Length: 418
Image 1 (cartoon, one colour):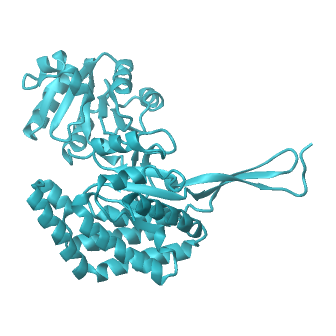
Image 2 (image 1 turned 180 degrees about the horizontal axis):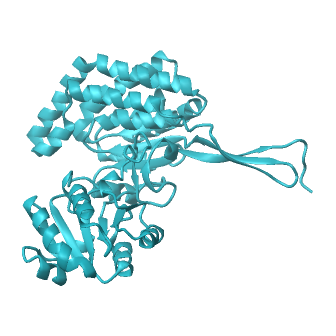
Image 3 (image 1 turned 30 degrees about the horizontal axis):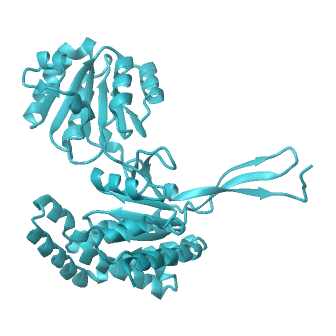
């Protein structure tokens, strides 16, 4: 079979399996995930040698130390993957939930019920734990899943997928409910993105270049998340101690993640008092500051910012800083330059907090909190398949509920339309 024929068959088999998945009870799905967790831990001795093949190949290709660390699996990390599956099993099952119910004048009862999306394609890079994490979330929500991991983790991904598929076989659940594209050629991705009759949604997880490639080539709806240009606005009523701690946490705890702070906006009325303080603190923590003219005048250690800095997702210890006239200017700046990810206001004024929440268009808007809380686990979703900066069909961190859709249900007693 050609690559095209293989991908078509994988997608069609997954579509057929999705019909079976939609009928599984919560008890069966939870048992499946718990058995998968046990099976992964039990197969640790077999997974690690396959992972070693990927690490050796990665070293030969010149992968960075950070990339190799993401790729590496050991006993502790495999336990962590198994633990994540158990956490998903413990989450409430959204499938079958009736979210609304109302009565019509003719006594018809109309409602909306959550159902699985169908077949979900996940395209991801480097981290082999995604093979299990993404599969668990999709399966718990009653979907089938087609996985395509990066070439650098092919042996690890195949080993993990084979173990999970073994549990499906043992439980007489269609093995095709969890499929992994088993070859690394880019043609496989391109063919996967053409299977609109079999795959309902594509979720890419990786860098901006991967996501743009998927969007440009997909015939299937794609959940997009190009980058995280996250802002904090320090209002004139802000508590400086609170503001400083939130900014430090947002920028420096993990600067290489999408919910890290990238642009700091400061109200002009507090600029002279707050900028020298925050600039000294951030500089001591190794942060390079790039500011507008007013900021640089008050923090001489900063370098002048360019237009590109307001668009930048640095993913490192660099922060763009600007002084703004008022909340209107702050909101205008955010809505112009943001990536629809996460924004926060530091304020003691309730009315300005409410304005910020209403008028900033991003998927996660906060008051007096670190941008680092923009995460499915931190927001109480239990687990996260990714973050969507697209307003259809989900916006922000995506949990189990976002892997479902709704259908109308109608209860009648013989009514006919006049």
